[in-house]
Length: 113
Image 1: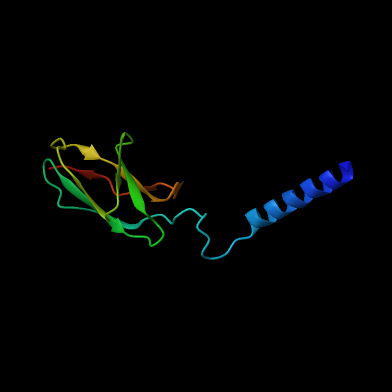
Image 2: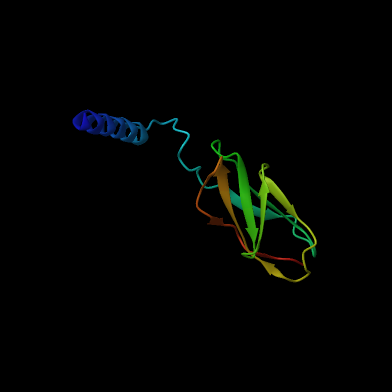
């Protein structure tokens, strides 16, 4: 009886590991690709627009300004307002697919007018 349970347990483990290690090109468990073509436009004294190229495998994007404020958006642009005049800003972005994230990628720093 003990041998039967050990073999059953071993079989279940092998089946489970086999299922976990098999992958295909359309596997939904892989992290999304990083956003590309990051741009800053329409910079004024108190606002700017950030934009990027969409990745087909992302549901949304997280944007971080000056390593502090993080926002989540589904669009491929983000309007910043209430910025301080004459201030340098840095930003980075990552793609999100379900609960998986791409690596952060830095956008071009900019200074408000």
